[in-house]
Every structure is written in structure tokens, then in C-alpha cells.
Length: 67
Image (cartoon, rainbow, N blue to C red; front, top):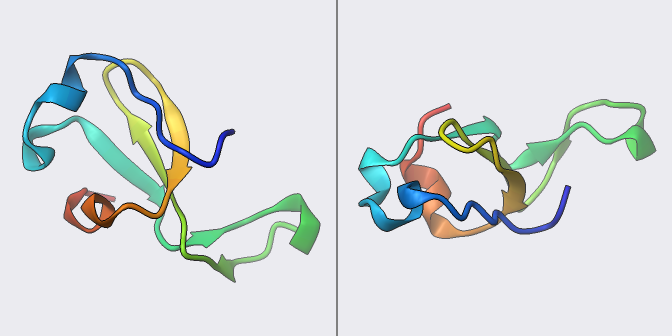
């Protein structure tokens, strides 16, 4: 998984509140490096429900997305 969210479908052109994007890990991660335990992070994991793209980002728009 890249440290950016690279959805390329039509959802990117919609206003943020209307996009079919969800946050699966908000400001945290569960990495193998820490035994899959919760760890605070500046990054969140975002998924596009339309095309399936998944990525991590610390962009401010994450605050406007649903869990």
C-alpha cells in the first residue's frame, strides 16, 4: 500500500462529501512492525468503494469522510 491515495475514477471529481470514499483506519495503523497493535499516526487509510483503490494519506479531507 502506497503512502498516498491514488483513486483515479470519477469519484475524484465529485465534492468530497459526495465521494464514495471511506476511512478504514483514522489517524492510526496496525502494522506488522508493532505486532498489529493500534498505533497513533498522522496518516489514515482511505478506500474508494467505487474502484477499490486503497491508500494512506494525511490530507485534511479525511476529516470529512465517513468511517
